[in-house]
Amino acid sequence: MKRSSLLTVALAVAALAVAPPAQATHHLPLGRQVLPAGDGWAAEGTGTTGGSAAPETGVHVVATRAELVAALAAPAPRIIYVRGEIDGNEGPDGALLDCADYATGGYTLEAYLAAYDPAVWGRDREPEGPLEDARVASAAAQTRQIKLKVGAGTTIVGLGARAVLKGLNLHVDRVDNVIVRNINFVDAADCFPQWDPTDGALGAWNSLYDNVSLTGATHVWMDHNTFTDGDNPDSAQPRYFGQPFQVHDGQLDITNGSNFVTVSWNRFTDHDKTMLIGSSNTSTTDPGKLNVTVHHNLFHNNLQRLPRVRFGQVHVYNNFYVVPDPAPFIYALGVGVQSKIFAESNAFALHPDLDPAALLFNWGGTTLTARDNVLKTRHRTEPIDLIAVYNAANDPDFGTDAGWTPTLHTRIDNPRIVPLLVTLRAGAGRA
Image (tube, rainbow, N blue to C red):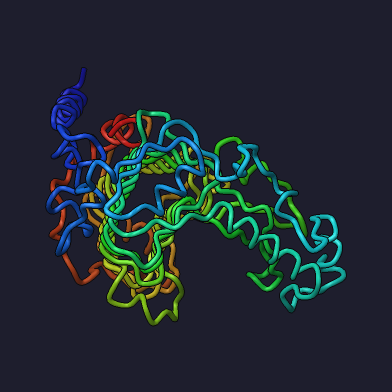
Protein backbone atom coordinates (compact mmCIF):
# COMPACT_ATOMS: atom_id res chain seq x y z
CA MET A 1 0.00 0.00 0.00
CA LYS A 2 1.30 3.47 -0.90
CA ARG A 3 2.32 5.76 1.92
CA SER A 4 -0.40 8.29 0.97
CA SER A 5 -3.05 5.53 1.18
CA LEU A 6 -1.74 4.43 4.56
CA LEU A 7 -1.94 8.01 5.79
CA THR A 8 -5.51 8.36 4.57
CA VAL A 9 -6.54 5.16 6.33
CA ALA A 10 -4.79 6.24 9.51
CA LEU A 11 -6.55 9.58 9.46
CA ALA A 12 -9.90 7.88 8.91
CA VAL A 13 -9.39 5.46 11.77
CA ALA A 14 -8.36 8.31 14.04
CA ALA A 15 -11.46 10.26 13.11
CA LEU A 16 -13.78 7.34 13.69
CA ALA A 17 -12.25 6.78 17.10
CA VAL A 18 -13.46 10.20 18.18
CA ALA A 19 -17.19 10.74 18.69
CA PRO A 20 -18.71 13.50 16.52
CA PRO A 21 -19.17 16.83 18.29
CA ALA A 22 -22.93 16.29 18.45
CA GLN A 23 -22.40 13.37 20.80
CA ALA A 24 -21.01 15.37 23.72
CA THR A 25 -23.98 14.31 25.87
CA HIS A 26 -24.32 10.83 24.40
CA HIS A 27 -24.75 9.28 27.85
CA LEU A 28 -28.20 10.90 28.05
CA PRO A 29 -31.30 9.65 26.21
CA LEU A 30 -31.61 11.45 22.88
CA GLY A 31 -34.57 13.47 24.08
CA ARG A 32 -32.54 14.93 26.95
CA GLN A 33 -29.54 15.89 24.86
CA VAL A 34 -28.87 19.52 24.00
CA LEU A 35 -26.77 21.14 21.32
CA PRO A 36 -23.14 21.11 22.49
CA ALA A 37 -21.56 24.48 23.19
CA GLY A 38 -20.04 26.03 20.10
CA ASP A 39 -21.68 23.61 17.65
CA GLY A 40 -22.56 26.08 14.92
CA TRP A 41 -24.84 29.07 14.80
CA ALA A 42 -27.57 27.40 16.89
CA ALA A 43 -25.16 27.66 19.83
CA GLU A 44 -25.22 31.46 19.65
CA GLY A 45 -26.43 33.27 22.78
CA THR A 46 -28.73 31.06 24.81
CA GLY A 47 -27.90 27.98 22.75
CA THR A 48 -30.43 25.33 21.77
CA THR A 49 -31.92 22.98 24.34
CA GLY A 50 -35.29 22.14 22.80
CA GLY A 51 -37.59 20.34 25.20
CA SER A 52 -34.77 18.64 27.10
CA ALA A 53 -35.93 20.01 30.46
CA ALA A 54 -39.44 18.57 30.11
CA PRO A 55 -40.91 16.92 33.22
CA GLU A 56 -41.93 13.29 32.88
CA THR A 57 -45.46 14.47 32.13
CA GLY A 58 -44.02 16.32 29.15
CA VAL A 59 -42.48 13.21 27.57
CA HIS A 60 -44.65 11.69 24.84
CA VAL A 61 -44.22 8.53 22.75
CA VAL A 62 -46.26 8.73 19.55
CA ALA A 63 -47.03 6.16 16.87
CA THR A 64 -49.94 7.76 14.99
CA ARG A 65 -50.67 11.13 13.44
CA ALA A 66 -53.35 11.81 16.05
CA GLU A 67 -50.87 11.13 18.87
CA LEU A 68 -48.29 13.39 17.23
CA VAL A 69 -50.82 16.22 16.88
CA ALA A 70 -51.79 15.86 20.53
CA ALA A 71 -48.17 15.83 21.69
CA LEU A 72 -47.36 18.97 19.68
CA ALA A 73 -50.28 20.70 21.40
CA ALA A 74 -49.17 19.66 24.91
CA PRO A 75 -47.53 22.22 27.22
CA ALA A 76 -43.87 23.07 26.66
CA PRO A 77 -41.20 22.05 27.26
CA ARG A 78 -42.01 18.78 25.52
CA ILE A 79 -40.08 15.75 24.31
CA ILE A 80 -41.74 13.75 21.56
CA TYR A 81 -40.43 10.29 20.72
CA VAL A 82 -41.57 8.95 17.34
CA ARG A 83 -42.06 5.18 17.23
CA GLY A 84 -42.31 3.45 13.84
CA GLU A 85 -43.90 5.13 10.83
CA ILE A 86 -46.39 7.99 11.06
CA ASP A 87 -48.14 8.94 7.83
CA GLY A 88 -49.45 12.50 7.57
CA ASN A 89 -52.30 11.27 5.40
CA GLU A 90 -53.70 9.13 8.22
CA GLY A 91 -57.35 10.06 8.73
CA PRO A 92 -59.29 10.12 12.01
CA ASP A 93 -60.28 6.46 11.59
CA GLY A 94 -56.71 5.39 10.85
CA ALA A 95 -57.33 4.87 7.14
CA LEU A 96 -55.00 6.62 4.71
CA LEU A 97 -56.34 9.50 2.65
CA ASP A 98 -55.30 10.02 -0.95
CA CYS A 99 -55.33 13.01 -3.28
CA ALA A 100 -58.93 12.41 -4.30
CA ASP A 101 -59.99 12.82 -0.66
CA TYR A 102 -58.61 16.38 -0.61
CA ALA A 103 -59.93 17.46 -4.00
CA THR A 104 -62.86 19.85 -3.90
CA GLY A 105 -64.73 22.33 -6.08
CA GLY A 106 -64.66 20.07 -9.11
CA TYR A 107 -60.86 19.87 -9.31
CA THR A 108 -59.34 17.11 -11.39
CA LEU A 109 -55.87 17.11 -12.88
CA GLU A 110 -57.30 16.32 -16.30
CA ALA A 111 -59.60 19.36 -16.21
CA TYR A 112 -56.79 21.56 -14.89
CA LEU A 113 -54.47 20.49 -17.71
CA ALA A 114 -57.15 21.16 -20.29
CA ALA A 115 -57.96 24.62 -18.91
CA TYR A 116 -54.38 25.91 -18.60
CA ASP A 117 -52.70 24.26 -21.55
CA PRO A 118 -50.49 27.04 -22.98
CA ALA A 119 -52.08 26.41 -26.36
CA VAL A 120 -55.37 27.49 -24.79
CA TRP A 121 -54.42 29.76 -21.90
CA GLY A 122 -51.22 31.29 -23.23
CA ARG A 123 -47.93 31.89 -21.43
CA ASP A 124 -48.16 35.48 -20.27
CA ARG A 125 -50.38 35.17 -17.20
CA GLU A 126 -50.79 32.88 -14.23
CA PRO A 127 -53.85 30.58 -13.98
CA GLU A 128 -57.03 32.09 -12.62
CA GLY A 129 -60.68 31.21 -12.62
CA PRO A 130 -62.82 28.35 -11.24
CA LEU A 131 -60.34 25.51 -11.73
CA GLU A 132 -57.46 27.47 -10.18
CA ASP A 133 -59.78 28.37 -7.29
CA ALA A 134 -60.63 24.67 -6.93
CA ARG A 135 -56.92 23.78 -6.94
CA VAL A 136 -56.23 26.33 -4.21
CA ALA A 137 -59.12 25.04 -2.09
CA SER A 138 -57.99 21.45 -2.58
CA ALA A 139 -54.44 22.37 -1.59
CA ALA A 140 -55.78 24.08 1.54
CA ALA A 141 -57.55 20.85 2.52
CA GLN A 142 -54.31 18.90 2.15
CA THR A 143 -52.41 21.55 4.09
CA ARG A 144 -54.78 21.27 7.04
CA GLN A 145 -54.03 17.55 7.13
CA ILE A 146 -50.29 17.25 6.58
CA LYS A 147 -48.76 20.56 7.78
CA LEU A 148 -48.09 20.39 11.53
CA LYS A 149 -46.81 23.32 13.59
CA VAL A 150 -43.93 22.74 16.01
CA GLY A 151 -43.92 25.02 19.04
CA ALA A 152 -41.11 26.51 21.10
CA GLY A 153 -39.28 24.34 23.61
CA THR A 154 -39.75 21.12 21.63
CA THR A 155 -37.52 18.13 20.99
CA ILE A 156 -38.64 15.54 18.42
CA VAL A 157 -36.55 12.40 18.17
CA GLY A 158 -36.95 9.01 16.58
CA LEU A 159 -36.83 5.82 18.61
CA GLY A 160 -34.31 3.55 16.91
CA ALA A 161 -33.34 3.62 13.26
CA ARG A 162 -36.81 3.23 11.74
CA ALA A 163 -38.73 6.24 12.99
CA VAL A 164 -40.45 7.73 9.94
CA LEU A 165 -42.51 10.86 9.31
CA LYS A 166 -44.05 10.27 5.89
CA GLY A 167 -46.10 12.71 3.86
CA LEU A 168 -45.74 15.37 6.56
CA ASN A 169 -44.54 18.95 6.54
CA LEU A 170 -43.19 19.99 9.95
CA HIS A 171 -43.49 23.78 10.21
CA VAL A 172 -41.33 25.59 12.77
CA ASP A 173 -42.87 29.03 12.53
CA ARG A 174 -41.75 32.09 14.52
CA VAL A 175 -40.72 30.13 17.59
CA ASP A 176 -37.45 29.62 19.44
CA ASN A 177 -35.56 26.57 20.66
CA VAL A 178 -36.40 23.41 18.70
CA ILE A 179 -34.47 20.17 18.19
CA VAL A 180 -35.30 17.50 15.59
CA ARG A 181 -33.13 14.37 15.50
CA ASN A 182 -33.02 10.81 14.25
CA ILE A 183 -36.07 11.01 11.98
CA ASN A 184 -36.51 9.57 8.48
CA PHE A 185 -38.46 12.20 6.53
CA VAL A 186 -40.14 10.67 3.50
CA ASP A 187 -42.17 12.02 0.57
CA ALA A 188 -43.93 15.25 1.53
CA ALA A 189 -45.74 15.24 -1.82
CA ASP A 190 -48.11 17.93 -3.02
CA CYS A 191 -51.30 16.57 -4.62
CA PHE A 192 -52.03 19.89 -6.33
CA PRO A 193 -48.94 21.53 -7.89
CA GLN A 194 -49.56 24.88 -9.55
CA TRP A 195 -48.69 25.55 -13.18
CA ASP A 196 -46.99 28.91 -13.65
CA PRO A 197 -46.34 29.69 -17.32
CA THR A 198 -44.46 32.85 -16.32
CA ASP A 199 -41.85 30.99 -14.22
CA GLY A 200 -38.77 31.05 -16.41
CA ALA A 201 -38.68 30.89 -20.16
CA LEU A 202 -40.77 27.71 -20.43
CA GLY A 203 -42.94 27.85 -17.31
CA ALA A 204 -42.76 25.49 -14.33
CA TRP A 205 -44.80 23.35 -11.96
CA ASN A 206 -44.42 24.53 -8.36
CA SER A 207 -45.29 22.51 -5.28
CA LEU A 208 -46.09 23.62 -1.77
CA TYR A 209 -44.54 21.41 0.91
CA ASP A 210 -41.11 20.89 2.42
CA ASN A 211 -40.32 18.03 4.75
CA VAL A 212 -39.30 20.67 7.29
CA SER A 213 -39.92 24.42 6.96
CA LEU A 214 -38.32 27.01 9.23
CA THR A 215 -39.99 30.42 8.91
CA GLY A 216 -38.93 33.07 11.38
CA ALA A 217 -37.60 30.31 13.66
CA THR A 218 -34.58 30.78 15.92
CA HIS A 219 -32.22 28.40 17.69
CA VAL A 220 -33.03 25.22 15.78
CA TRP A 221 -30.86 22.08 15.66
CA MET A 222 -31.56 19.59 12.85
CA ASP A 223 -29.32 16.59 13.47
CA HIS A 224 -28.91 13.00 12.24
CA ASN A 225 -32.04 12.95 10.09
CA THR A 226 -32.55 11.34 6.68
CA PHE A 227 -34.51 13.08 3.92
CA THR A 228 -35.81 11.20 0.89
CA ASP A 229 -38.71 11.11 -1.55
CA GLY A 230 -38.97 7.36 -1.02
CA ASP A 231 -40.64 5.49 -3.86
CA ASN A 232 -42.16 8.69 -5.29
CA PRO A 233 -39.24 10.68 -6.75
CA ASP A 234 -39.84 13.65 -8.98
CA SER A 235 -37.70 11.92 -11.60
CA ALA A 236 -40.51 9.38 -12.02
CA GLN A 237 -43.23 11.99 -12.55
CA PRO A 238 -44.69 12.72 -16.01
CA ARG A 239 -44.10 15.91 -17.97
CA TYR A 240 -46.97 18.26 -18.67
CA PHE A 241 -46.70 21.26 -20.98
CA GLY A 242 -43.14 20.13 -21.64
CA GLN A 243 -42.05 20.59 -18.02
CA PRO A 244 -41.56 18.08 -15.16
CA PHE A 245 -44.62 17.69 -12.97
CA GLN A 246 -42.83 18.41 -9.71
CA VAL A 247 -44.68 17.29 -6.57
CA HIS A 248 -41.96 18.12 -4.00
CA ASP A 249 -40.51 21.40 -2.83
CA GLY A 250 -37.60 21.56 -0.37
CA GLN A 251 -36.34 18.95 2.03
CA LEU A 252 -35.27 21.56 4.61
CA ASP A 253 -35.95 25.24 3.89
CA ILE A 254 -34.84 28.06 6.20
CA THR A 255 -36.54 31.35 5.37
CA ASN A 256 -38.46 34.45 6.54
CA GLY A 257 -35.90 35.77 8.98
CA SER A 258 -34.98 32.46 10.60
CA ASN A 259 -31.74 32.67 12.55
CA PHE A 260 -29.22 30.65 14.56
CA VAL A 261 -29.66 27.23 12.96
CA THR A 262 -27.32 24.21 12.93
CA VAL A 263 -27.88 21.47 10.34
CA SER A 264 -25.56 18.58 11.18
CA TRP A 265 -24.99 14.93 10.28
CA ASN A 266 -28.06 14.56 8.03
CA ARG A 267 -28.52 12.59 4.79
CA PHE A 268 -30.19 14.38 1.89
CA THR A 269 -30.79 12.03 -1.03
CA ASP A 270 -32.28 11.88 -4.53
CA HIS A 271 -34.04 15.25 -4.54
CA ASP A 272 -34.16 18.40 -6.61
CA LYS A 273 -34.63 21.59 -4.54
CA THR A 274 -32.93 20.49 -1.34
CA MET A 275 -32.18 23.39 1.02
CA LEU A 276 -33.14 27.03 0.51
CA ILE A 277 -31.79 29.64 2.92
CA GLY A 278 -33.52 32.97 2.35
CA SER A 279 -36.99 33.98 1.20
CA SER A 280 -36.55 36.34 -1.75
CA ASN A 281 -34.10 38.82 -3.20
CA THR A 282 -36.20 41.71 -1.88
CA SER A 283 -36.95 40.41 1.60
CA THR A 284 -36.93 43.02 4.37
CA THR A 285 -36.88 40.42 7.17
CA ASP A 286 -33.88 38.34 6.05
CA PRO A 287 -30.99 40.85 6.08
CA GLY A 288 -28.91 40.49 9.23
CA LYS A 289 -30.39 37.06 9.94
CA LEU A 290 -30.24 33.60 8.32
CA ASN A 291 -27.07 32.71 10.22
CA VAL A 292 -26.83 28.96 9.59
CA THR A 293 -24.20 26.24 9.99
CA VAL A 294 -24.33 23.24 7.65
CA HIS A 295 -21.81 20.55 8.61
CA HIS A 296 -21.12 16.83 8.22
CA ASN A 297 -24.10 16.24 5.94
CA LEU A 298 -24.29 13.82 3.03
CA PHE A 299 -25.79 15.20 -0.19
CA HIS A 300 -26.24 12.22 -2.50
CA ASN A 301 -27.73 12.63 -5.98
CA ASN A 302 -29.32 15.98 -5.18
CA LEU A 303 -29.71 18.42 -8.04
CA GLN A 304 -29.50 21.91 -6.51
CA ARG A 305 -29.71 24.12 -3.40
CA LEU A 306 -27.02 22.42 -1.32
CA PRO A 307 -27.73 25.04 -0.04
CA ARG A 308 -28.86 28.10 -2.02
CA VAL A 309 -28.25 31.16 0.15
CA ARG A 310 -29.46 34.73 0.33
CA PHE A 311 -28.23 37.31 2.87
CA GLY A 312 -27.03 34.98 5.63
CA GLN A 313 -23.62 34.21 7.06
CA VAL A 314 -23.64 30.49 6.29
CA HIS A 315 -20.80 28.18 7.33
CA VAL A 316 -20.72 25.11 5.09
CA TYR A 317 -18.05 22.65 6.19
CA ASN A 318 -17.17 18.96 6.24
CA ASN A 319 -20.07 17.99 3.99
CA PHE A 320 -19.79 15.19 1.43
CA TYR A 321 -21.32 15.83 -2.00
CA VAL A 322 -21.87 12.85 -4.30
CA VAL A 323 -23.00 13.46 -7.89
CA PRO A 324 -23.35 10.10 -9.68
CA ASP A 325 -25.24 11.44 -12.71
CA PRO A 326 -24.15 14.69 -14.38
CA ALA A 327 -27.20 15.07 -16.64
CA PRO A 328 -29.82 16.35 -14.16
CA PHE A 329 -27.35 18.03 -11.77
CA ILE A 330 -27.65 21.83 -11.65
CA TYR A 331 -25.33 23.15 -8.90
CA ALA A 332 -24.30 22.64 -5.28
CA LEU A 333 -23.78 26.04 -3.66
CA GLY A 334 -26.09 28.83 -4.82
CA VAL A 335 -24.50 32.22 -4.17
CA GLY A 336 -27.43 34.59 -3.80
CA VAL A 337 -28.05 38.23 -3.06
CA GLN A 338 -25.88 39.56 -0.20
CA SER A 339 -24.99 35.99 0.78
CA LYS A 340 -21.87 35.34 2.81
CA ILE A 341 -21.02 31.66 2.34
CA PHE A 342 -17.90 30.31 4.03
CA ALA A 343 -17.28 26.87 2.49
CA GLU A 344 -14.40 24.87 3.87
CA SER A 345 -13.12 21.33 4.14
CA ASN A 346 -15.91 19.80 2.08
CA ALA A 347 -15.42 16.78 -0.18
CA PHE A 348 -16.91 16.38 -3.66
CA ALA A 349 -17.20 13.07 -5.51
CA LEU A 350 -18.33 13.88 -9.04
CA HIS A 351 -19.13 11.86 -12.14
CA PRO A 352 -16.12 12.16 -14.48
CA ASP A 353 -18.25 13.98 -17.08
CA LEU A 354 -19.30 16.75 -14.69
CA ASP A 355 -17.33 19.99 -14.91
CA PRO A 356 -16.44 21.09 -11.35
CA ALA A 357 -17.22 24.66 -12.41
CA ALA A 358 -20.89 23.67 -12.01
CA LEU A 359 -20.52 23.32 -8.25
CA LEU A 360 -21.14 27.05 -7.77
CA PHE A 361 -24.00 29.06 -9.27
CA ASN A 362 -24.48 32.81 -9.34
CA TRP A 363 -27.91 33.80 -8.05
CA GLY A 364 -26.97 37.45 -7.71
CA GLY A 365 -24.19 37.12 -5.17
CA THR A 366 -20.74 38.63 -5.53
CA THR A 367 -18.36 36.83 -3.19
CA LEU A 368 -17.75 33.84 -0.93
CA THR A 369 -14.89 32.24 0.94
CA ALA A 370 -13.85 28.73 -0.10
CA ARG A 371 -10.83 26.94 1.32
CA ASP A 372 -9.42 23.46 1.92
CA ASN A 373 -12.05 21.68 -0.17
CA VAL A 374 -11.18 18.47 -2.02
CA LEU A 375 -12.27 16.64 -5.17
CA LYS A 376 -12.43 12.85 -4.83
CA THR A 377 -11.96 10.71 -7.94
CA ARG A 378 -11.71 6.95 -8.31
CA HIS A 379 -7.96 7.01 -7.92
CA ARG A 380 -7.11 10.02 -5.80
CA THR A 381 -8.25 12.94 -3.69
CA GLU A 382 -6.86 16.35 -4.49
CA PRO A 383 -7.49 19.97 -3.50
CA ILE A 384 -10.00 22.01 -5.50
CA ASP A 385 -10.24 25.78 -5.54
CA LEU A 386 -13.97 26.14 -6.04
CA ILE A 387 -13.85 29.85 -6.82
CA ALA A 388 -10.91 29.67 -9.24
CA VAL A 389 -12.54 26.80 -11.14
CA TYR A 390 -15.83 28.71 -11.34
CA ASN A 391 -14.19 31.99 -12.36
CA ALA A 392 -12.23 30.29 -15.13
CA ALA A 393 -15.49 29.26 -16.79
CA ASN A 394 -17.85 32.12 -15.92
CA ASP A 395 -18.24 35.89 -15.91
CA PRO A 396 -18.47 37.90 -13.78
CA ASP A 397 -15.99 36.48 -11.32
CA PHE A 398 -16.78 35.78 -7.70
CA GLY A 399 -14.70 37.58 -5.09
CA THR A 400 -12.80 35.39 -2.65
CA ASP A 401 -13.61 36.96 0.72
CA ALA A 402 -17.07 36.63 2.29
CA GLY A 403 -16.08 39.22 4.89
CA TRP A 404 -16.31 37.07 8.01
CA THR A 405 -14.63 34.12 9.67
CA PRO A 406 -16.73 31.53 11.52
CA THR A 407 -15.97 30.98 15.19
CA LEU A 408 -18.87 28.74 16.19
CA HIS A 409 -17.74 25.20 15.45
CA THR A 410 -16.36 22.39 17.56
CA ARG A 411 -13.81 20.84 15.23
CA ILE A 412 -13.20 20.81 11.51
CA ASP A 413 -12.11 17.45 10.14
CA ASN A 414 -9.51 16.86 7.47
CA PRO A 415 -11.55 16.88 4.22
CA ARG A 416 -9.81 13.71 3.01
CA ILE A 417 -11.56 11.66 5.68
CA VAL A 418 -14.94 13.38 5.25
CA PRO A 419 -16.27 10.85 2.68
CA LEU A 420 -15.77 7.91 5.02
CA LEU A 421 -16.72 9.79 8.17
CA VAL A 422 -19.94 11.26 6.80
CA THR A 423 -20.99 8.12 4.91
CA LEU A 424 -20.74 6.06 8.09
CA ARG A 425 -22.18 8.54 10.55
CA ALA A 426 -24.69 10.85 8.87
CA GLY A 427 -28.40 10.14 8.91
CA ALA A 428 -31.13 8.65 11.07
CA GLY A 429 -30.17 5.63 13.12
CA ARG A 430 -26.63 6.89 13.60
CA ALA A 431 -27.16 9.43 16.39
